[in-house]
Length: 339
Image (cartoon, rainbow, N blue to C red; front, side, top):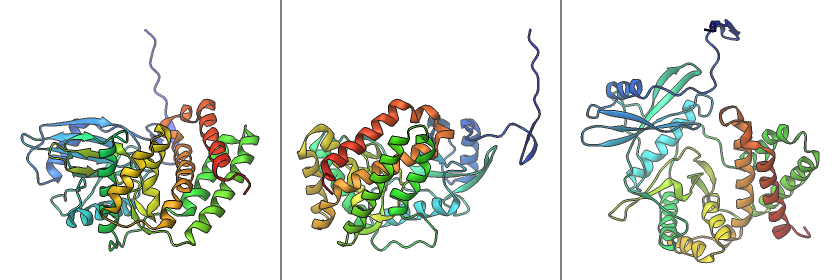
């Protein structure tokens, strides 16, 4: 039998265990932490649902289900998390159906967890029963439009003392471009194109902002995958991890993209009908929807580049980079021709 050699690791933190980028916490240990920290019935099970930048667990008691989220140590700072949880509490207080954070026994909305990669934070949420919405269904798009309008209206007066990045042009263009650059070093033609494309987007966005786009707290990832419809028809919005102050049209981009990909304008029309039943949309915001689709795609490529250490380099493989660049070139051909 081959002998196992113990390798001593020396890092900036001293000699000891090998450094960890992102650990998966024991579900059983987390169940016991939840039992001690939260004023709920004793959890019977705790199961990992999905590992990601934040890891999601299903916690069950004899009568109820809850969602536990363990935020990534590097991904979200305590003030970022506090902003999100305060926004959710504010929305729930205004009657908006969202997955609401549950306060711990000490009143805190999140709890620190010592992990190999550093302190992470735990938050417990109400469980949203039901099935995911689908952008293929006009009725679902209408309901999603109503929910987007409800969130925007209810958050108009939201104020937090906690810092949270704005979903502004730094977030949408400048930061993503800096993160993407190393991954296009071996593709100079694509990098040069992307620089020019981003500059044109920035100029277009600056002009659009000057027309008075609606600004305020946004969900930040308002896709069908983040909405559940219960048997009684209630739609609950989940996962505000990308939330922050921004131009509200940013929340329209997922359904707008789905309508384009399906070549079904009725999906987009249904969303707008649902939204305007609750809140008006200015002409400037409607006009900006295609532009913000491109801005969101650039921002999301930046997220992939930022998190290669967790997701793996294959998430930015040559084939996938080809797909991103094809989108940008196609969008430019349709919207920037002659500009």
